[in-house]
Length: 461
Image (cartoon, rainbow, N blue to C red):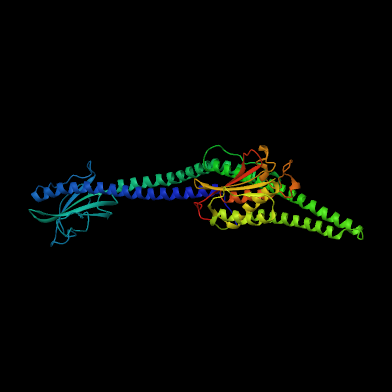
């Protein structure tokens, strides 16, 4: 399929539109000028007709009427035979010298006293091939007659012909000028777009750090370049996160798999001496760890790909209570819910339950004696705080703990049993709900806070 550039299409459209506009304007100009010249010519013939008719009605007609003078009109007075036609039996009472022969200027006779004007070809006027003839009946002392006045159409024809010749030259010239100007202007306007295209064509998956040039004009093309660069930045960040994710996931899965294989190899080599119940316990613990890791990876992948699939009003305090109930029966930690108040938010109940579960699980793994949960609603925002009295989070690590597979080098490390995905999943879900998650200052332990809007989003999901 043949393709044409935007530059060519815009130029062609501009030329076609301008050509159509100029053609219509030229036709209108010719028609209006022709009509105006005819009106002027008819006005001269009628003025002459009035003068000659007045002389004829008073019986003061000279033998010879003036003709070819400054107004360019000629006149003739012809008697009417039997009240119908002036020719051939009509007698010429008077006429201009340039009228040759005893022939009426025209073969038509007005029906009444009104003036009739027509175009006559080959009138009996010297040097005239076409004329505008005005006629009117008059009553003379000698009987009824018809007064004819005529003016040559040659000046009108010459003027219109000259105008047409001029327009035939000017209109194509203007179209050519418009085409050349449009071609140059569009080419100059699209030059930054071509630079962007060439740069994008050179960008590959391994060169996502490249950026397209921004023209700095502040127009739509500049905004396009800014949008492209923002998109490239997002792609670069996503590619970097994907590489890190794959690398970390492989590392996390490699460790338990290596441990399981070593356990099996040792047991296989010493089958008689192996403590098989202990071996099975360790294998079960390792597989459960991998199962939790894979489940977390799937949850995180779904959260990033699908986002929030359904939203409704959710009682956040009910979710907290449901997550704490099984913990009460299995933990020796003190669960402080004195600051738990009613709070409704707008979101996906399953995903919000995952957030609460991950926060409580994180607190359980690091708490020394107590887990405290608070829930308050202020200024259209629900604030959920999950605190523990464990080793706490250093200020420089308060953002890093929400990264995938992030662990601290101190007491909150991999020995606590987590894979480092729980808080990353919580952050992703909270952000998809339009909220924020962070770490508050605390004199001891860690205080993680989640802020969620309590109302529905402005735009439909």
